[in-house]
Amino acid sequence: MDFVAVTAFGILYAIATLILLALGLAVIFGMMGVINLAQAEFLMVGAYTVLIATAHGASVWIGIAVAPVVVGLLGLVIERTIIRFLYGRILDTMLATWGLSLGLVGLVTLVFGPTTEGIATPLGHVIIGRYRLSEYSVFVILMAFAGLGLTYAVFNYTRFGLVARATMQNDNMVSALGVNPARVYMGTFAFGAALAGLGGAVIAPLTGVVPTLGLAFIAKIFITVIVGGPVILLGTTTSGAVLGLVESLVSYSSTPIYGQVAMLAVAIILLRLLPQGISGFWRRGV
Amino acid sequence: MLEVEGLHARYGQVPVLNGVSLRVGAAERVVIIGRNGAGKTTLLRALMGFLRARQGHIRWRGVDLTHLPPYRRARLGLGYVPQGREIFPTLTVRENLRMGALSGDGSRFDELLQIFPRLGERLAQRGGSLSGGEQQILAIARALMGDPKLLLLDEPTEGVQPSIVDEILEQLLGINARFGVTMILVEQNVDFASAFAQRAYTMLKGQITEELRPEALYDPRVIADYLGV
Image 1 (cartoon, rainbow over the protein chains, first blue to last red):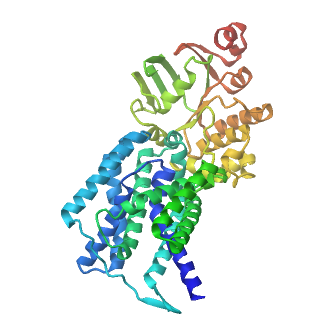
Image 2: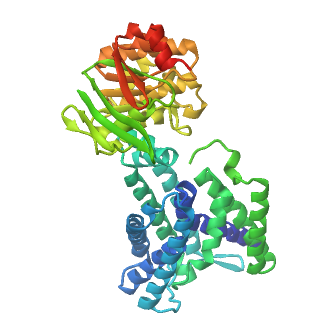
Image 3: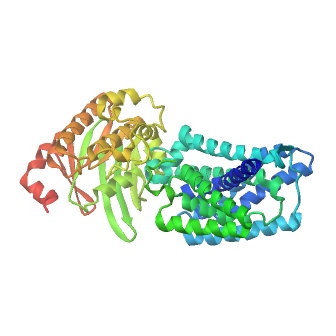
């Protein structure tokens, strides 16, 4: 019984981290169509923000609260200096953001060194039968829900969200209604970067912090968003649930390597059957 | 109110406006007729700022608009109902109208729903699920939400069923009277154009060629020169 409970919890945790880490990309790639290969480095900078905060005596929680702001501002600068010249130019965007990714990894390695730095995991443990569960992983799951809820609320209940959705559909028409679309793209990109910063910060105490931290996740989160399809939030949530379930089930019954292979295989099958992604035939929305 | 002088514009290397000049007064209703390719839509796009003026000037209530981007022109009181309507298909009717109110305070909402009762019944529907005529009405109402002083209308009758065309005509005349909105209409439908306008311009090869009274639009010579295929 406790084995079932702990396994179920592990699966939920795998799904939640996948969604939490993919959320920023769902906005930047799913909604804006920007293939940002430096998305992994947004996660990484979020994680380093927590590391720096704790190294200066602040708590992990402060670090997690500050990370979205830091990475959001970083996203803002990157949008203004690089991305805004490349909208609609897919190959150029990939090349530029790949270069940016290498540059950020190099810069962080130069400053902080190539070693993995640990952050003490806050909170304690709960005992379920013969198993110990970290309370922090419960927090991670809650943060995934919070991030989803926040993003949903921003896009559906705020003026910024309404204008952002309209701009992604028809930016010329938006400008004919008195809004500068360039500002909307800038804000949306920064918001996606901030979400990635949050994700990276939240997982930092569990994964350890290293300049190449994001590399482990970049493929997974792109796959999750692509399989999710055009309804970005519900689509990404659904695909995160399916892929996270497959990966963790197979990982538990064999090894994490096979888990990743199974996840990729399922993603390929899903995209073969539903080329537009899981939400391709849903009514459109966010 | 609006003064356009010697406006030139082109798509890439292809010149489409070759020195357009016109004047439109406050609360006036003016129609521009001409064949496909005469440059009517391009003229509206250039007035709204989607196309760069290579030469000439656009002045609006004493302000030089010539080099301002579209969103600045919208904030100065220009409203645009584009060809093909371009409503936001996945946004609801209510959200489409809210988008129109971004440069104003949205206080027009209830008033416009009285003028356009069809929209009031469909506020929660997605814009893309409306019929062509309803989408056209939505595009007009969206433009009016921002309290424009000059409304640019690009063939609002295109692909709209006749009963709704009559409805749109009455609504436009009512809005012009009620809010004092200046209107420039681009149209190929002679009945609609002559019933709507107080004054007509004809366009040929990117230039304004004649200024006519609306009754003159039925003149066989005018039809042959500017509307015949």
